[in-house]
Length: 99
Image (cartoon, rainbow, N blue to C red; front, side, top):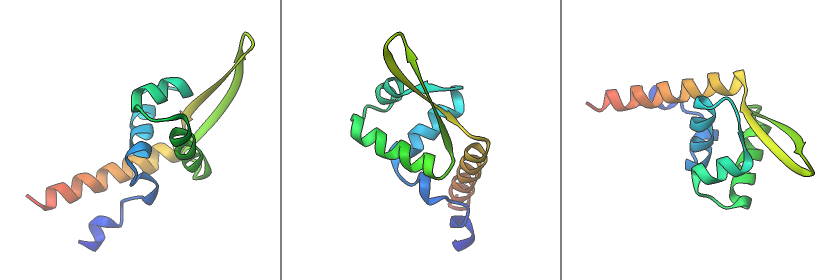
């Protein structure tokens, strides 16, 4: 059982972080408001989880302006995609081992 759990990454244990990574795996990029809408979370909650994933280098941030309004977009990194795929594979193995 221990070897099955070794592939799980602690950064993805939280449902919001799991949701962020799932959405960014499918979408090329999303801005803050789109992520907030997808995940139905507060600004502060989303910001703290984005910061944690950014600290792990699993996502990258691009800030720009649309007109005079700031716009922040998020992208999954190659490192983040690889770590997330490994996490999903470990979950699948864990599920299969219970059948």
